Image (cartoon, rainbow, N blue to C red; front, side):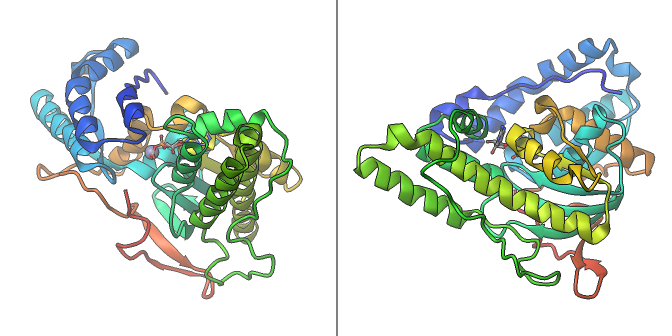
Amino acid sequence: MLRSLVILSQDVHRLFGGVVPEIASRQHLTGIVPAVQAALDEAGVTLHDLDAIAVTHAPGLVGALLVGTSYAKALGFAIGVPVVPVHHLEGHLFATLLEQPDATPPFTALLVSGGHTLLLDVPAWGTYHLLGQTRDDAAGEAFDKVAKLLGLPYPGGRPLEALARTSDTGVYRFGKPMVRTNAKPGDDDYFDLSFSGLKTAVLLKVRDAEASGTLDEHRASIAHAFQDAVIGTLTDKVERAVRMFNRKRIVLGGGVACNLALQDSMQQRFATRSAHVFAPSPRLATDNAAMIAAAGLFRFAAGERAAPSLTARSTLPLPGMLRYAVATERPRLAQSTLADSA
Ligand code: KG4
Ligand code: ZN
């Protein structure tokens, strides 16, 4: 049950057009104690009511993660409760469950955030079959970069979606990246994704429009066409995964998952296949502590506890993640280089 959710946004990064790691760490330092107190107050409990403390230790910006892990370990020691380490992406997988109790495995999962884009088959919590991932930019990163090209503020996903809504696809159309209609299961590009080529295509169109003095007039149409291309690719890849494993549930996670055009596209595509699409509400789609607590509860019940040596890691594969080898239909262990970027 979700008893409280406190999010401290670091608006200062807007000034720089991206996250400045040093500033992020400092803001974590000053924000963590009041944020925890506010969360306890909102839930109507005190520190002494807690059974365990879940903390995300990886992957991400080490400075910010270190503040959280150090604080969690110190607090756990002080009040005598165990600390449970949680992988950030596992948190995103659990986010929807907080509001929609049926968002449970087995399901196809699409994780689309600022740092990651992963397509997974999830037969059970803790067992994650990696089908595909981005080969370059994450979906959210592509939204942020294209938003910047269009003169929108950071982070650009939400403003870009709002701008795209003001236009129909008109003059502009971009091809869906990495979608070959004759691709077969087992082909490298069957599930993988890529957004950097699309980003370059947008850049060229923006430059052309600037040169002809028509950018203002076409900004919304470019945004719409870019968003269509990203959503088209994501929906096609999810459909391939749903078909292969015959899943009846699809769970979206990560900041991009609150994009309503993406949610609509998924709902429409799967309405006839009678697969249910679960998407988190915006407050649970973007980074938050409640999703870390939800995943932490699962790990806590499984008996996992942090060692005193727990530390922050900038990269770490999702625990329980196997690379699904489509050709042999047998999952094999993920290598540490897979899906472990921050
Ligand atoms: O999951 P998240 O909060 O942080 C990471 O773990 O990265 O995701 C943030 C990303 C940003 O790239 C942001 O632009 C994107 O999610 N985002 C959106 C929308 N809202 C946030 N992208 C597209 N449409 C949105 N409505
Ligand atoms: Zn995230």
